[in-house]
Image 1 (cartoon, rainbow, N blue to C red):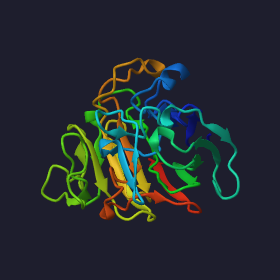
Image 2: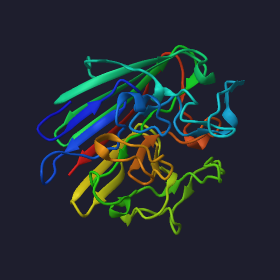
Image 3: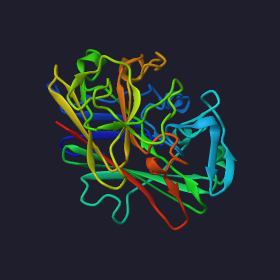
Image 4: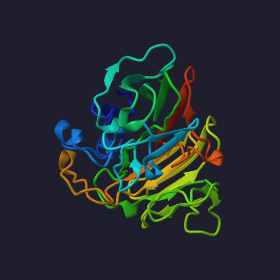
Length: 315
């Protein structure tokens, strides 16, 4: 997909965003990390560029309690379920098509990818139909995530690209990040919530309301507010190039992950996937939200549509 500002390349494996080219001083430059080929993408264990599901982030002890029933999920992070389990949506083959109806109104270019997750997939109840539409409009990329189900279930989809606004030059520390949220999810050493409500960031290291260099390690979720309202979630800047990314979303949370566990494998165009090669800005629902009323549990029932949209604006 492309217009006169941006160019995107998307893979069917994981509905992954493989390239995102933005203007640079010597021509278009790619600002997302990616694997070197489709085979490496299919083996990915670090969610590079993919759409994550059925439930992004963590569910404690691999247990889902829903409408009085307990569902045991497959576990892939010690005793817990991370990003949908060991065979989550990021490892699947999605089918692509041209958008229809209002899926990409007034877009310069767009594509929709779809996936069917059967009842019992990784332990989750209900057959879920998920889709993502990538659309470009001027200097903005829209990522629209949708899902329906034939039985009551939970769903939390996110796009998991790692951004490097330096396009392979310099370090993550060259970036500055601002997150205007005043609340966050307090977590334990296993990155699972320890409180039943979000906690304030004021006076703590998590207060990113003013831009700060990306010198610290982050794998934390900031709370933006109730779902369904578009808000500014983050501003990422790269002073050496003057490049800027504004992230807006109608999802209730933003997980910031500085890629400290990236494996050091060869990546595309000779850019290795080393620790801290990029930062993931994952607009999503909150971790371990089922059973926590103050976390807006993303329960999806038959006849409803799960809808979360994120916008990336480049400057």
